[in-house]
Length: 113
Length: 114
Image (cartoon, rainbow over all chains, first blue to last red; front, side, top):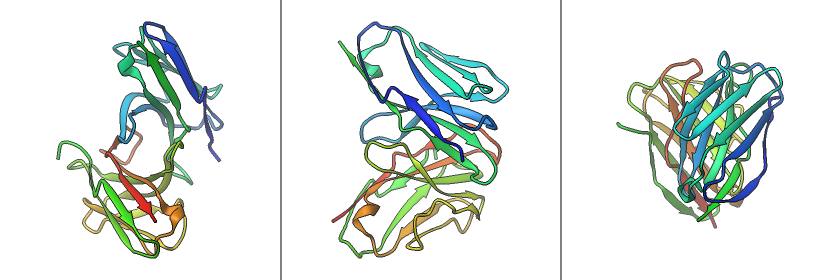
């Protein structure tokens, strides 16, 4: 059974720092991996989608990498801002017996001004 | 529509009451998913539709939970005889094709069972 783990569970950094959020998954047979952002009381906003054949994706200050063989992904946030404060969720998409997106529990990020 | 729309955004129910949560996916999206998110947790899969066919309902926690998508567009998640442990945010997501792609989520329906 696919399991997704995110470390750390919470992170507090001063504004301007570069930071890395980690995601690991137990079954490398995935179609893609997606990073989401969730603000309190809100739904999920897709940040980056990495297909299984890709190694990384970039969008603005965000860069996500995927190492399928080792079951890991990282989300790199450059020059963090207070507006980046949110919970970041990693999810893997694997068709098969479960046929759905399996989520980690998220990393709650707080960027202090 | 422009995005995935869910209603109601907030629902308070007395224990034992039946509730219905609605999801209106992005127009033309083939696949639709329901997730349950407890406080401080990641979303947990409930069920999945491809068009009107419910292809996976393995995540539904009990037979009190029922979902349908009769015309392959709007979906309804129904919870009968609600219990306190049903309190959670129920998220709906849709995807354009049946294959792996970017999932778009609604803002969720927050259910509180008293």
